Length: 279
Image 1 (cartoon, rainbow, N blue to C red):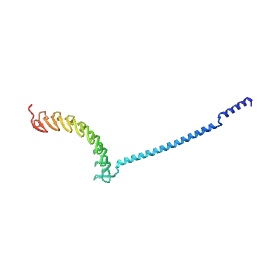
Image 2: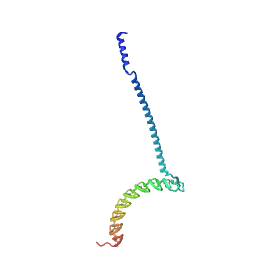
Image 3: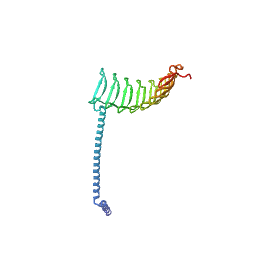
């Protein structure tokens, strides 16, 4: 080997020997630190798996509790009872406590087998949403009960599916706007309730859409001017009410438009006390 080659090899050996001045100590330190980090990572993975398992178990317990609550709501903690028609068809099914109190979900059927009514009872009283059906399967009425009283929106339907009434309840009493319809879809009546009593302007219509009557209510009684019409639009009567009774001048008409003198007159506290004056 030439001297120049020998010098190059010697130089490389010297550089390799000087690359780790600690003599391999730094490499060992880094390897140890890497091993410690790997160990910490494994520990964290195990803790995460343990936490996930615990969460899974908690979720399972929550689901089981929800199912138990569902079953309790369904049965109310009572024994299942079934009543049947003479034909053998189910008439009702529900749950009774030992003292005979109706609890849980109750279902009733028409004799033809169609469901008639369904909902839950709590301490004998209806609770939550109740639905009833006509014997042809068409929904008849639906709304919510709270503490044994109707609450919120209630809707009713005719047997052929046409809506017949809609309005709200508050603490078991009608409240706000209520509307009802004839079975042909024409409005039947509309007006407001206040604490279960008719209040303000109310209007009624015939099936042909012609106005039937119109006037004001105050605290559930007719008050002030009222007008009533025949089905073809001719007036039937017109006058005033006071505290729910006819008061003052009332005029009645026959269907041909002529005045009905037998009914027309001056009224007081709902009684006709005099005929109409000539003018």
